[in-house]
Image (cartoon, rainbow, N blue to C red):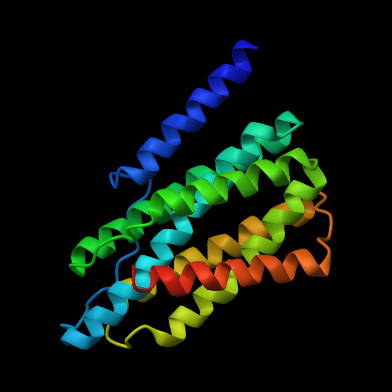
Length: 208
């Protein structure tokens, strides 16, 4: 009982830290050797795209915290906790880049966090193999999303491009780790629903 309470309080603390806008990375942000000044329209585009990426990291924190909370095996709990720790670096990197671009985070971050946490709880309650399957599909979609951003980011915004490239590599690794841990394949309708929800979130966060 005490251990469960400790984990719950830990997840609530993680939520407050995520939504406070004061995330601290354990690793330095990837930096380009040089970056030409961006034009106003390029800066605006980069800011909007990095806001969407920041929302993705807010959701990642919620998902991994919820799945760690509901994991049935200690090994899976440790795996989710470690992934959340690495995703925290992504959160801090995108926060920092938003400030550098004079862009704001999404005004709906509490809503995104709450929705993602609820999904993580549902996935975790379904069982460890399904929870891992949810990670695999989520990371697959995130990797595709980041690849699309690499195509859209201004060519001169080397800093944002370095951050997104590193994130893409690490998201793919998280997906592979979940697959190797015994993930179950999610039914097609669920995968489609996840894609639909992600599109709504990204299009909204681009502006709000």
